[in-house]
Image (cartoon, rainbow, N blue to C red; front, side, top):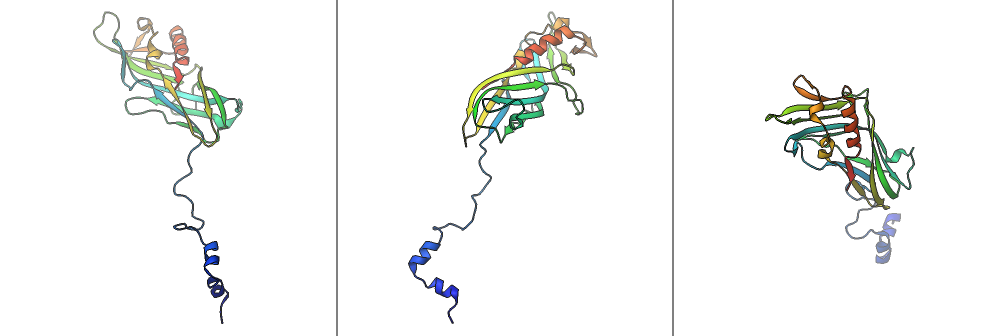
Length: 224
């Protein structure tokens, strides 16, 4: 007795061709690898490899700051839109390290006019400071370098970095946010800083110098 399967198989070349997949195709098989990323990425970079001699008398060894809020702002986003917001992202540069990217996989399509970077302390973290910079400086009339530390917990610094870039549908967009290392320290009056434990110190105990540094920090980023 012929089975149903036998009848189908003997139904002729036309029936077989109509029911089969193309050459080399496996029914239901998905393409190899994960789907391509099509969202928005913020790539935090520095304009020089650390440690860097930013002038004849100043060297910067490492830079840390806590990105308390990092937000890409565009015509399709809102202040409460979490799809383009990241909280407490560590930004740290030294000889061996650089910050990780911030990826917004669900960022809405549209024009992104600027990136808001809010630098503030993270009280519950292992590093509580808002920012910290280490390096060395040669003071006027001195042939040797003295280490310095710029560190603060209390301040909140907001940097609004103009971007003017468009995220298209199904196309990835990366905005590089570049930190100008030299801009951070070019206005520091090193002779006005106290020396404690063999290091020059800028912190909440030097409010005038700290306020000037916070202003420089807020203007030290640019989009590329």
